[in-house]
Image 1: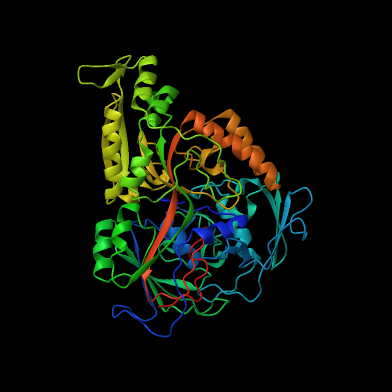
Image 2: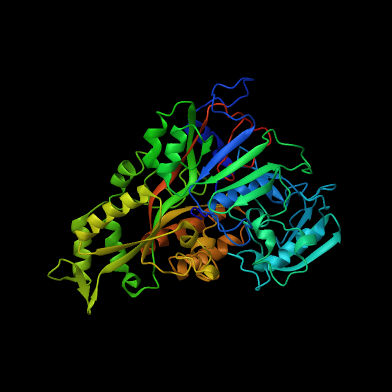
Length: 547
């Protein structure tokens, strides 16, 4: 998503580490409001993304993932300890409780009774079966079907039981199948969508009906989305009476509105703004480890970047420590692996590639790239010129690109920058999105990993767009084999071995460069109470949040 994102995030054994790394703030109810700018029970949130739709089946913008966790229908949520908890399912299936068969190929979901959609219609197993078929219907523009294609048969023994029969075990089932952990598709209302040939242009996508503590009231495109409490929600009413998501593509404008005390919450705060938020009157912040990683992607479908030597030289010519200090203002963790060091499946032993312009020049010299009179290298009549695509309204990204342009110029690489609106930059393949259609040589943004650490959705050979999200178009047989084995293994220790193989190949092949593993910052009104974001799905625990 921007971060698309995509979110896919933490694991169970890191709670103590996360708490130790957090900035402690008191978000407990006090009964009084300290700030005159506080609007009682109304939360105003700033997002830099311009939303292209509100149906998470059709796009995976990070902001939409947050919004959907509050409004849409899910089998599972994640608590503040990053553990899965039942939502519309009544129990988390495991092999121990019989929810997963011994061979790992059958998963049984027991559904909650007495649940209603936000329009008052009853929820039952028909909705789950219908939604599963929607995802696997090729007529629908689903961003990804990873995992879903493994479902070969669905049984509905009664209106509150659904059984998936899989072609093989699938270790990421809990994350993928209707969970808020990441940019996932939700359960859809059959009674609204069943009569349509596809969901791509359904009016539903502009103001969806769901099952969450909130429901959509209004979407003013390019301006704001308004949510209000869902009176039919099975858990009861949330304490907030309104959530306003303000679309502000320019981050400087977000800061201006914070300084003018017009907002209550901003996440994620870019590193370049971290020092400024400390001087805001009436606000505080939380800083905590993240399962998101900032990365630079090379388009391996383009001839120049197919050459491993070029990618290796480019990595040597990126001063990531300087990027962390100048762009991230000291935020972020420097490492080659995309996996958070807080995760139990982390791969910490890979040495970091140093910033070495001499080494980069040597690699390109040996690969036959010769400098021309203008200092730019060429080979076989082709100049070493790269199209760097980015979204508008991100001054920190623009500054990063200029730093990289300077370093790459010193090794004979020319960079041409093209800016696109966020809605176009991150749009799905079917809508001509810049990233997914491969209209770039270099891009940078952030991905988040799920609680299992499955990298296949990002880097498996069968996930190259339009089939999935492998935007570098990387296909490595060794890594691909390890990802396949990872996905059929339920044992965590065994999966860690496969994880090490995948990360090792990523670092060796350089389809991406991890600039930092993120540290997330939430800045918010000091009057905000009971706000405890997790790393998997930060807004899952919103029932008691109030202001």
